[in-house]
Image (spheres, rainbow, N blue to C red):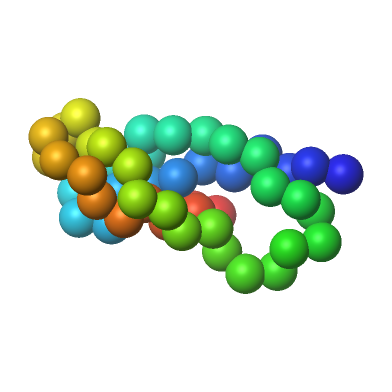
Length: 48
């Protein structure tokens, strides 16, 4: 079963993206994405 999660920018903490991950994955998702508020590519991490 897939779980929907929200990704937040690690620099400005704005919540820009939402995505899905598998339900049995215990670690937090982390990926580089473009933040329109910072106007550059930054690391986005899964929020609670």
